[in-house]
Length: 106
Length: 341
Image (cartoon, rainbow over all chains, first blue to last red; front, side, top):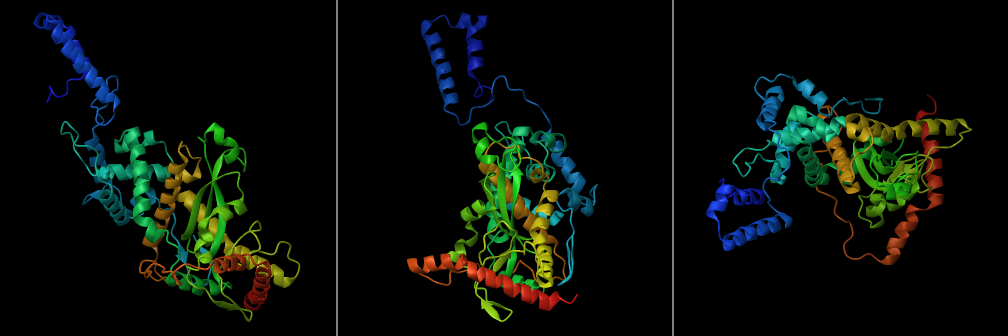
């Protein structure tokens, strides 16, 4: 999986490392790697799936904990908050009382 | 919104748009759950908070919660507009007329008015077009509401420099009526029969038989009583706007979006959810229920209409004489009903 995810930057780094220089002493190989980098960049410009973006910070905000908290608060057998609290917090601040032909209290 | 209604919306939205389901990414790590992707947009709508503010509780990043908001609104509109923002069917019209006749307005289909939603991030090039009421750019919502705050018609997105008349002329409110596709309305008031329902409106609306306006400077007792009752009943729409704004923090404050069509989606989704909540929490002992509203309206006339019919319908809608007669009849009617009290 790691090999699949080699980015252009990683390939370039690999080429420029001293170990790589020992392995690649041929102009042809350098040209091949240059071509690979070129293709990789072209693929990125086209859009679609592009993998990780160098320079973006990645925050591990533990998605699962958000889900677990919502479930524990409202949607499990014995939730933290009551039905009335859920109802109030999600958009129903009004109870409408309508008596036919009479006054309407909101 | 009760828990059961939330779960129903969440399931429908997830079935409609697979983006909401919990999927693994390329490395096999699981993404956000449908609960997170639905709670985040609801919190943004209900509290009017920035997309970033839901990160701490829901653990959803800013850009993801914005995407969730847009997709949620689009899915709600696609799924529920047909039922919860439908034009009144024959059953609905009958129920509305039956209720409103007890208030002294036998042909009333609701109250109409406009509301502005300020647009903070309006592009500078459009500022002139969108600024008209006050100093900030805004967009106009035209709506019709009934006594139970159900919103029957909503037309949003006209630039804020338009007044209610301009918006009315662009709005599809009377489209069905002009095409003769609306359910028929017949009522008798003060001995005269009319064939067109009307909306209670305020002073700016034109003198059409489709609007019943108040008397501007009432002098006689009859006029005073009529003005009192009409203005009291027209308040339905003002209350509906009030409840809409209390319920949805995002409408209460200025709109921060950049794209006017996304803002339109947000507004329409709020209105549809508003109607869903009303429907969900309606008491058991009420005279009518909106769920079993019968089949959608079928056109009463098939085939192409003659151009002359179309023009005649236009003229009927704008007939000032009928409008004045309607108002006079209602003044008498209201006086006979409530005059003594």
